[in-house]
Length: 130
Image 1 (cartoon, rainbow, N blue to C red):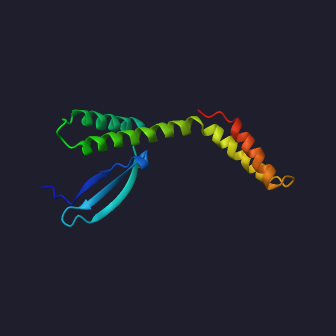
Image 2: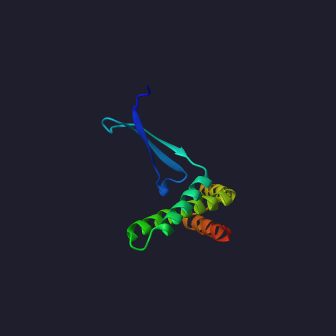
């Protein structure tokens, strides 16, 4: 015989992308025993967003429009985070290079703060980030 000692919940918060929170609770008291985060592959998040949209599309007109709006909002938030992460990955080299440039410029002692800021601003405006 297997004795059930607890239950697990998965908390999906698009703001935490790519991580989901796992909560293990004691079955008898519902007290939290363990809380941990684990990353999910981008494909899982994209599928979750698709599933939310599909489910929202299947809800009939007489059902709660709040549920439809909520499901669509979750899908939008997930895709916003996925797209932002893809953009960060594409531009990582440019960000790293710019950060190095800023550090080097700030370390210069031959320039005043205004000139440093102007040089950094000029370099930032030259960046072509997609």
